[in-house]
Amino acid sequence: MVSKFEDYCWSDIMDEETLQIYRAYERPLRIGIRPAVLMIDVYQASYDGGQQRVVDVIKDYPSSCGERAWAMVEPAKQLLTAARTAGLPVIYSTGDERSNAEAGRPTNRVTMTETNDAYKILPELAPEPEDLVVYKQRASCFYGTPLMSHLVGIGVQSLIVGGGTTSGCLRAGVQDAKANGFHVTLVEECCYDRSPINHKVNLFDMHHKYADVMKLADVIKHLKAMTAQP
Image (cartoon, helix red, strand yellow):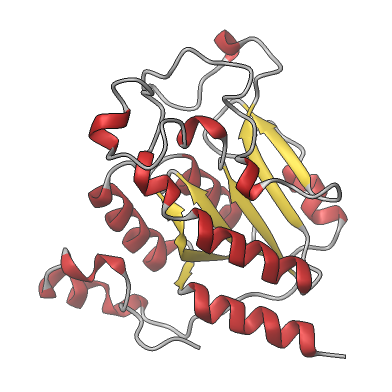
């Protein structure tokens, strides 16, 4: 389904010794049975200020991931279209603006002054009426939310995941998904982080421990094959 086990965005930062150490994790990559798509925190605050460099955009929008978040929008649109065509459930997570912010924050990072739109899903990736949106106060979309019971209730056994940030809420959700028994596929082009180093290192680490990182083209090919099945 894929060309090489290590043929991903981290190839320019990982030395041969590190790759050799992690060869014990090499395995066939796959999308699990009965999958759903989980889009983690593709909310407005990450995209505020447009496609600027992160170091520039955070002067006015401290929570923005700038051009690095926007780079995943088109790939994510393609993933969502393919998933919906194949009849897969689609779930989103976002911050809980409905409750007292002092009750809990997902990380220690200084954030923006929150607006009414901060945690709304980016319009370009907007949920359909049948999609579930999970509201969370912690980094993981599993913690203190109905996500687990919803997935079990509709018979989901594996997850295809995108969103951000790779080193933060995305990683927290992936680790909890794995801990709860779901096979996780991470779509490389559909994940983002404000730091390219954090993005690459965390994708590398999750690929070897908690998830199968796969290219968008390979995932869409699999979903099209599902669509073609009688």
